[in-house]
Length: 434
Image: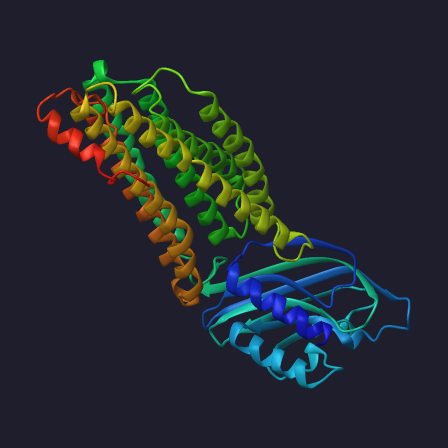
């Protein structure tokens, strides 16, 4: 199998496993790069799409022979055509992707002007999702250049720098930010109305809601400015800050609720502290990975590695937050055998098991189902997966906050001693075994 074929298969795997569509105006620096293909961006075009590529300070040298400038250049490639190019590369050992009939050639280095620079805009009239590539078909040729890409669709006389499937995102995020702000107000009212039943965990939950609302506001502003101007105007920095605080708070709240902190006990056990000591530093690393993934792109050599780091950390954190819930269920089962409060423990066990199922369902939907939606949805409907993720998140917050709201006689504090024998019988069953 040729090197081009291997690289095309690798690119196809990125397309299938790590769908992305970026559209910001980007200035990139390529230094002494020998990769046969470099993927810059992936973008969904309408009938009025445009690609503008500017390069300058271009140098290319080879240790084998004088490089042919016509063998280095930029092109567009759709997902459907990628399969055809892969087939072509398999049938021709000397295949150069720039010779393929399935690509949309933009320009080669043969067209560079005297100052080793080039600047040209190209219309894209066939609506589809295309990827912008640079091809280097000269073995052992090192390429150095400064690249500026500007990709957009025309909406009337205005440029829209968001992909065709993401142009609805600013309004989507703004709508959900309003929903969370209302949620914060309702939660503050519930807490103020039940001060005697309020605990420290409820303050953390309020902070979580506020961070989620601010995170969505920043996401909406970020996407709006990218859509209109091609740059986020600093909103991306605020977005990443609030995202880090929000995700860290979310995992912390789930862990603390799972341990019963401030509800059942005023302290954490040593193993529960260790879970937090694992989750919080991992979230710092995950946030760094998220920034690298979002602010760079597939053109950097370690982009896929950063994606793998982010996915691995996310899996570890999702698994870690389940343990405290399981420990609490098992602890309550053991306690119920000796303290003679079967009805109370049964109510707590029921609540914990419901919480366990809700958390598992939330993690499954936002990690598996949303990923599947992103993979199978047409490029024009990429926003649907974002909407599904936000709806699932809002539903999870509503259920979790309702289950552990600060009201008198919450299931955490059930003191009804009736039907002790029936409750004891239920606790002896295997119903709460996980």
